[in-house]
Structures are given as structure tokens and as C-alpha cells.
Image 1: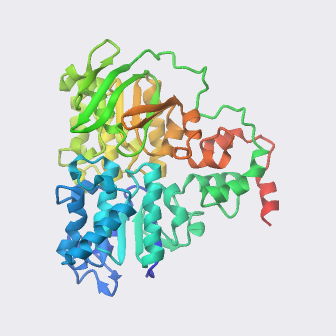
Image 2 (image 1 turned 90 degrees about the vertical axis):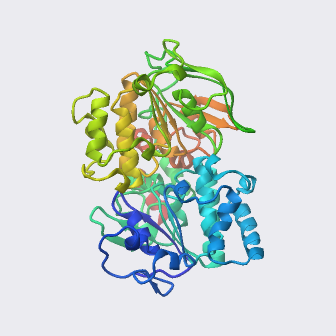
Image 3 (image 1 turned 60 degrees about the vertical axis):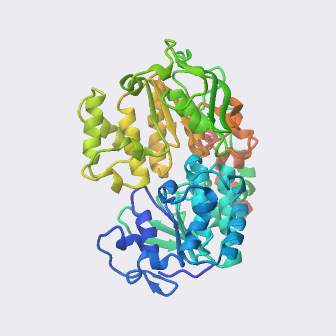
Amino acid sequence: MSYPATVTVPAIGLTGVGKSTLLGAINGTVPHFTGGTMAGTVTVAGHDTRDYPPRELAGVVGMVVQDPASGFVTDTVEEELAYGMEQLAVPPDVMRKRVEETLDLLGIADLRNRSTQSLSGGQQQRVAIGSVLTSHPQVLVLDEPTSALDPAAAEDVLAALTRLVHDLGITVVLAEHRLERVVEYADLVLAVDRRGAVRCGPPRELMRVTDVAPPVVRLGQAVGWDPVPLSVRDARRRAADLRSHLDVTVAPDGQPGPDDQVTSAVGAVRAERLIVRYGRTTALAGIDLALRAGEVTAVMGRNGSGKSSLLWSLQGSGRRDGGRVLLGDDTDTATLTPADANRRVGLVPQVPADLLFLASVADECATSDRAASRPAGSCRQILDRIVPGIDPGTHPRDLSEGQRLALALAVQLCAEPDVVLLDEPTRGLDETAKVRFVDVVRELAADGRAVVIATHDVEFVAAAARRVVVLADGEIVADGPTADVVTSSPVFAPQVAKVMRPDPLLTVAHVVAALRPDSDPDSDTRACTR
């Protein structure tokens, strides 16, 4: 299959089906770097990738990988943006102009002199994209480009990519699980199924038959809209008649009311005047926060707002320049031994590979079972609940980003810690895996554990979290029930909440639960769309 310039092509599919491999074939890393057997041909701007190694395609194809920090080769943001152009012998005056344009395009001018290692995950993602854009490639390939970005930053990056497509004629191919962010921008969709087969077609056509779809598509399927909507705007136009068939007094599943409090909600963790600084940057500015057992709390905020710093400080091994974090028995988490910390406060970091150090999935699971004194197979059982079917003999480095994350989650959850801290736990997880993970998180809370999730995934928050805390510049600016916080914010509201506003419905399941038993919402919709 061939693609013209000036087109945006998302590659979609379940975790581990081969989306990253497909992208690697475009820039030649498959098979030149990865090895393996490759049949067929991939031609980019007249170059057969079998005949041209990645270094000779660098000026034609720009690639941004899932873990952006792994590709950094310089010390500062400005140097990183210039590095690729230096390798292509771009004249210095042109380099300076392109660096300035890219800083403005991606909204990272304030990071110019920052160390690449001091950036948050989302900031690293934008710098990685910028380092490729400065070379002005004809084809831009991105693997999960918005996974670490807050909703506003993701919109900015996607708007920038759209301008590149429309104004410069660049072809953009990206793999993305958060389809609610990208489908409305797409000209074509590549759908990869479990067998590795690839289908290509218009978004509206493929969204009807693929394994994964954004919430607005699922909403359209649930209420019988045809064709299904691809954007919030499209769905809102068709939702007026749907509202007349809803009983919004029905309590949405998984979203308890204000009087439905967990009986074990007794201060599982208390952060008092928590301060974290990195040089002149204040990550946390004297935060007070009480986290209750049996409750799922989502921590949200723009990139660099202090979410990861908060989780590491709560866990006890992270930097802390003031304040304390007390467990229910008044033990400060900073005083816990590594063994006690693993049992009492478990943390899965943004880079899950930091927790994986053995040669196979089976070894990781077996070691986790022994360390946690759990029956053999316990870790593997948790892994299969999130992402089933991973070959036990696979090396963790050979897993997809989502599979690696699922393994790290299983390793930490196997210890059954009293407090579970998860930093961007849905990066790389497909729609189906996230649904299963919602069940896992709810069960942890039902068992009396305090679960804290730092995330930009508003759809996951709507389904899993009881409470949302929003950070900005190291301070808490909002703290309350999920429905109250997310529906009051145009940035953090999930797609269904935007469609159904002002009704307090956050997910497709909430809309289905609110449908009156004798209603046929599709009848009015059909009449309006004829």
C-alpha cells in the first residue's frame, strides 16, 4: 500500500500486535537494527528501506520512539534540537532559525537551557518530537507521541503536526492508543489485528469494525448512531435527542455519590507541608494531602506540575526538601527499609523498565512471587488479567511498551502493598487492557488499599477514580469527587462528559445505565439524519 504526501495516518490496534514494528519498517530500523526476516518492500520517497540503512534515511524519515529519553544524546534542550541538523550538515544560520521555530511551534521555549535529564516525561516527549522536526523530514513517524502529554499539550502537538501536514506536505504516520486524541485529525487509518494483518481505509469506515475505538465511537455504537461520530463536536450535534431518553438521576456505575463513603476511609497516608525542589525549580510547594484507604485518587495537572515528584515523595525514596509523609501508624515512609517499602508502599514509575532486570517474563514473575512470599503463579495471574498471552520466555526488553508496563504493574502488585502509587500506568495500554486494568484498580481499593494514580488519561480517570486532585506549579488547585472536578474543566473532561454536558455522565457505561428501559434513542436520531 502507498500513501501520498500531506496525509496523517494513525496505526491502531491492541497492545503487542505489531504497530511499533510497522513503524520501524518505515525508517529502516526493521530489519536493519532489529533483525528478523522481512518480506515485501517498503519504499519511502523512492528509497527501498531494505537497501538503505536508517542513517541514510535520516534526512527523509524522522522517527520518535515510545521512550523519548532513550534517544537523547546531548545535555540541553537547545543542543538536542540542533543535534540532528548537525549530522545532516545543515548550515548554522539555518539551524538557528529552525531551532527557534520549533521551540515556538511546540511551546517549549522556556525549556531552551534546561538539562534533558531534568525534564518531566511530557516535556521529554515534546523535545524528542522537536529534535526530529528540525531536520524537516518528508515523513514523520511517531510511536505514542501524546502518551506522556497532558490534554492541552497533546492538542498543541497534534495541531502542530496537522500544520506540518497541511502547510509543508509532510506525511505523518503515528501509532497511538489514545484514539480520542487523534482520530478526528486522521485522513487514513491503519488497523493492525491480532494476526498482524493490516487494513487501511477512511477513519469513519474502519472505526466501525476495528478492535479499538475512542469513546465517541463507542457511544455512537451503543445508541445506534449511523454513521458513528469521530469528534465531540459531531457527537454533540446528535446528542440533543438522546438526552430525552435518559434518566440522569440513575447513579452511574463506579461513581459513588457524596454520601457513599468507604467505611475504612481512615487516613492511610498523610502528606504534611511537603516540599520538593530541584535547583531553582520548586516541584512541590508545601502540599498537605490526606489519602484514604479504599479510595482511588487520580492526580492530574499539566506536564511539570509536580505529579511524579509527589508520588516519589509519598513513596519515601524520592527527593524531599521539607515536610513528612505518614502512614496510618505514623511511620514516615522515608524511614522504611526497602523490604518494608515494597510491602507497604508500592510504586510503578513512568519508566517501567526500571523495575525489570531479569532475562525473561517468567523469571520476573517467579522472582516477584518469591520476594512477596506469594504462591507460584500469582504474579503471572495478575499479568494475564491486564495483558494476557505474553510468551513467558520473552525478554522484557523485547516486549512492547504496553506489555512492559503490564509486567511492571504485576511485579509491584504481587507484593499487595497497602498503598499503591502508579505513575502514568496506562501508557501503551490499549482500550481492552485499560478496561481490565480498571477492574484491577477497583479491586485494590475494595480490598482497603489506597490507590494513587498520576495520569493524563482522562478517560481512564473517569472510569476508575473516585477522587481527583489537580496540581499546578507544585500546589493543589482542585480536590474533589471525580465527576465534580473533571466536568468543571474543559481540559480534563472526558469525551462523553463533553458530549453530554450539562448532564453528569462521564463514560459510555454511564449513558447506557441512564437509558430508560423503554426508550429507543436511535429512532429520533434516524429521523434527524435523513
